[in-house]
Image (tube, rainbow, N blue to C red; front, top):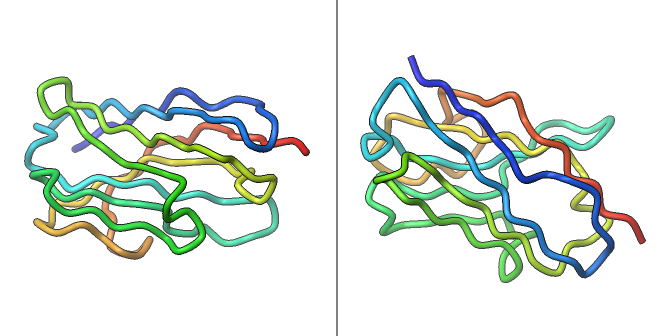
Length: 124
């Protein structure tokens, strides 16, 4: 089993930045592809970003491309999501996710493990 614990969410203003962190346990992070998904109130969960097991391949939703950056520190079993130029529409619960596949997932359904999530609220 894989346990994922997120941190770093909060309340910010539009245009601000936040960095989310996710610590994995139960399995070596280097064997997992990791990512982030989000769910806004009244909406379905949506894919945000992912990074493959080696860190050599990343994927982003069009809505965050150029503003968000995913990275990983396998030595610390941690994956990060740097979020810049935040918008009101980025408000959601952000969850860390993991996959045992070798590639960077591109949809919610391709992840196998989930964290509890951290709230990100962006005010205007």
